[in-house]
Image (cartoon, rainbow, N blue to C red; front, side, top):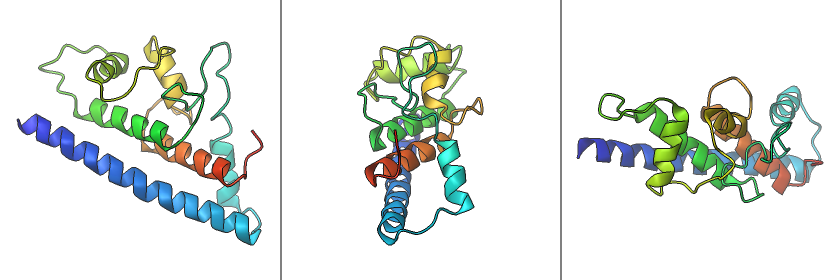
Amino acid sequence: MKKSIKIILISISTIILIMILGNKILAETINNANTNQSVDSTQETDLNDIQNIGKKYNGKDYIVGDVRNDNIIDVSDAVDVLTIISKILSWDYNNNKVQDDYEIYQKIVEKGTISNNENIKSVEDLYNICDVDKDDEISVKDARKILVYYARKAAGNLDN
């Protein structure tokens, strides 16, 4: 029972974080687009950090950042990344014989927490899609970068 409450609280916190980050990033992006502000170094860094998102992964049939495999990168993909992170961080390894993050992903899909992406067949695939900044870690930074990509795309500030 305690574990279920913990997971529910983590999930609610994750959704609230996504809503706050998403609204802030979208508002800033739209504001910058409307006022024709010049791009500062922080924005340039953001563009460099998201340059692989929305593109096919080299030699694979999937798109970086498209966690739901619906050919749309949006808030739902960031939510799925945060869900995966929360499950990885809160997993009880002593009671569940899980070998790696891919197996945790499979269990999340089996429980219906997130939808299945048929392109994710290994831990390598999971990281190629979710680890958008390629730092070998699926983290909140990846979810944030997906939101930045989505906000910039929605505001018309991306070429791809």
